Length: 69
Image (cartoon, rainbow, N blue to C red; front, side):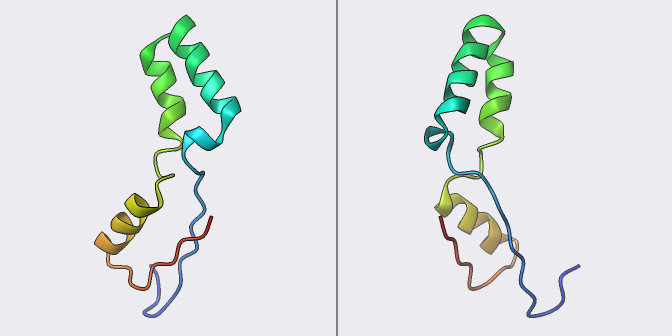
């Protein structure tokens, strides 16, 4: 539980497009394994959109959300 007025640092990966090695991995998995396997790679980067992350945090009750890349 976070104390009133407390701060919560969060670290997430940027969108998969900024990670060329992971893009290549996902493409390889899609081609040689399955769509489900490729989707799992993409899932790790699902919070990479700053505005989406801001909306999620605000929806959870956080205020003064600051996001830095």
